[in-house]
Length: 204
Image 1 (tube, rainbow, N blue to C red):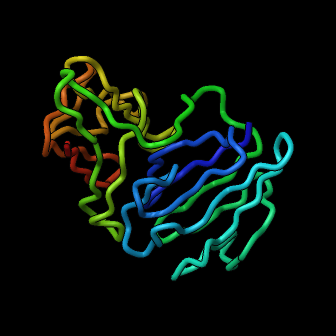
Image 2 (image 1 turned 120 degrees about the horizontal axis):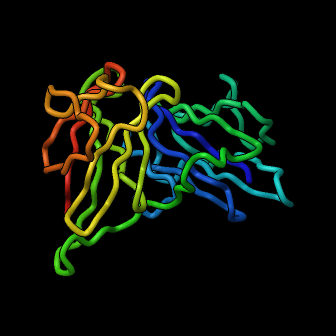
């Protein structure tokens, strides 16, 4: 299945399998892929699946444009390995999804105790993408650079937990190594991963 790998400042933040005919991307929350970046238009572009694996990216009249391999496009068929640039995000297209990763899709609303519905997100605190907000999606979401350092944020009944998947003592939580056991996250906790600082936030 075709797949998109979304990265900010070299850190992978999301993988999206293209299982539907149309997958939308933009700043507004109704999009399938939400990028809270003022450079990104509310409805920026969409990915169109034709047949089993032919994927086209189409710009939706965005203010700052959609680029494939650094060339602005209106609508273009994607080839395996193409890199789509939208605002400060870099999105790698893969013709076949990686079976070793979970299928991530739309942003989701997560309920912790049955009465309070919360949205979890990570806000980038350092680098050129500082201020960018990345929604945490579904039950388990991985962040990082495969082969270097990867953490997983999981949603459980007790709350949101972070665990190191790759990188040993590299990833930090509030300045200290996360360790081998999953750690419960609180609103405002700070993660550091491959030199990028991220704040974990909960919003109703």
